[in-house]
Amino acid sequence: MTPTYRERLAVPLRWWVQGTMLVASLWLAVVVAVPGVAAWVVAGLSVALMAALLLAYGNAVISVADGELRAGRARIGLEHVGAVEPLTPEAARLAAGRDADARAFLLLRPYRKRAVRVHLTDPADPTPYWLLSTRRPDALAAALTAAAASPRGAGGPGPTTAQGEQHAG
Image (cartoon, rainbow, N blue to C red; front, side, top):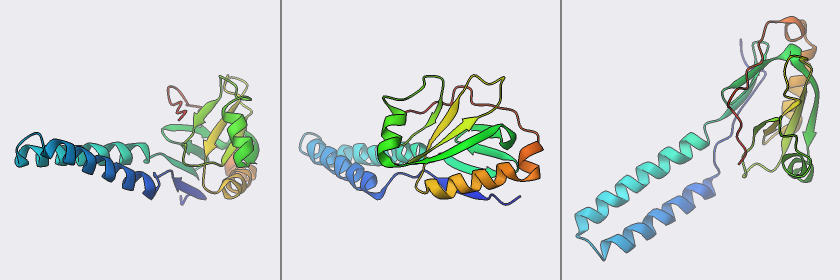
């Protein structure tokens, strides 16, 4: 089934620019101390490491499809989705900090200032809500609300699985 919502939390361009400047600075520091070939090898390895880290960190996907909400590797059936709140940047900051519940599932990215809080209704799940960074909180909230209200979302199968997938950062 085609997702009703899909978003990849890719890192912003400025992170790539800053990483490239860091590698260039490293190359400049190394090139004066060691032969040129070694400096280029260090720079090449640094570029590869930087790219791998930025791609891995920005690879998290949030989607609503097939009767499930997926956030990174975690997923939950839409029948367990309760109230959905799009949060302003200030409300998201407070929800991730001062007002946070330690039992909540978090998929946060520091370069995404807005978020959505998805309350859960599964009595067997100790997780009270999911807090998800997003570019488009209103669109995600609307997609979740519509999908959860549909007959497939309200009664479809879907185990709650958020083990070990807490990302705060």
